[in-house]
Image (cartoon, rainbow, N blue to C red; front, side):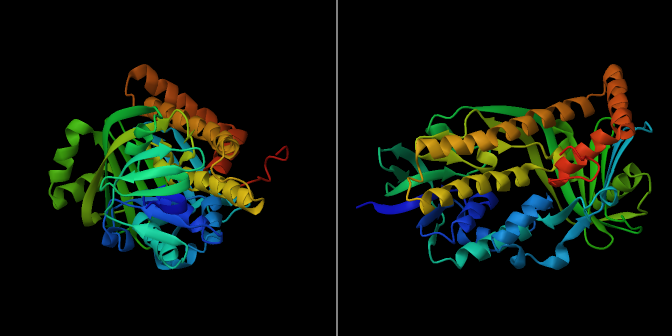
Amino acid sequence: MQTPYDIVIIGGGPAGLSFAASMISTDTQVLVVEKSDLVSISKPKPDGREIALTHLSLKILKQLDVWNFVNQAEVSPLKEAKVFDGDSPSLLNFKSDSSDIDALGFLVPNYQIRQALYQRVSQAPNITLKTESLVDDVEFKQTHSNVVFASGEQVQAKLVIAADSRFSNIRRKVGIPSLMKDFSKVMIVTKMTHEKTHDNVALECFDYGQTLALLPMVGNASSVVLTVTTDKAQSMLDMSEADFNQKITRDFKGQFGNMTQEGERHSYPLVGVHAQTFIAERFALIGDAAVGMHPVTAHGFNLGLRGQDILATLVKEALAHGQDIGSESLLKLFEKKHIHLTRLMFFGTNGIVALFTNDAPVIKQVRRFVLKFAEKFPPIKYLISNHLTEAKKSKFLPFQ
């Protein structure tokens, strides 16, 4: 006999657990299916990644009562962001003191967010976590869907949500095609301490042959993100700590004094994915299963959190009116509200990456012009700053 649920969420990562947390206040039975074991999601290990939360994302996490589970001692405000182009003087600078907000965003270790989401969801009586389990298929029926596990077990759900990474197997199984962009690059991330303060300023340096970023953490420590072509990645990972420290210190031109690696180096291949549609029959995509972003704009997690919030809001409205939470009209409205922004962000980000990682002489001149124009034209800067923070209004833009 099949076990009935209102909602089955495939994937116990940040997007899946966020949606589960959104359902805690509802009269629904929710099943979260995760292939990893319970320890992996209940006590996630530091993975080197820092999440740059926008103000909207922070608001959502607070509304979900998740923020209180985050160790506030590890939260670092982002006061300013600077973008450099190679060895040219071109610079684009964003400051939080130029608007009505205290910080552009807030940097939080990825593992802290994952752990906080688990702690919130694990306390909920209407949320069931099923770990070390794989979903093999989703079979649509008129009034529900059958979720088929690799073990042969089946459960019923009025709505199935896939949040199982940008390489989602279920997305493919239900027939949703996706556009995949392999950047042929690897992001190497590690925590480093340094002698001089970062003043809570993030740096993005599009050096020729590599991209180097610094995300300010608490104290005189930062998350350093080095992006290189795939063929150079292993040599960077194999480099001795002394040589790596020397390289990063030199690449930042001694701005922070001597820099010292703390912890291990983590590597992540850069592959962007965008699903051509976010919905199927009684089925929706959220998080990286819907759109997996290049990290240069730091908006991947924020888009995922925004998407689940849109879907959760629509589901709650349907429940309040006694409507079908898996209806075609609800899912189409979710897609309409979310997919256009994600397309803009996805293709816009890919365009930025193409422009700022191409070292052809003509392209170098173009991007220097772009940076100078954006820096000298205040409305552009304010629009970008508002988009980065997802602030609703700016005192500099009265027409909003």
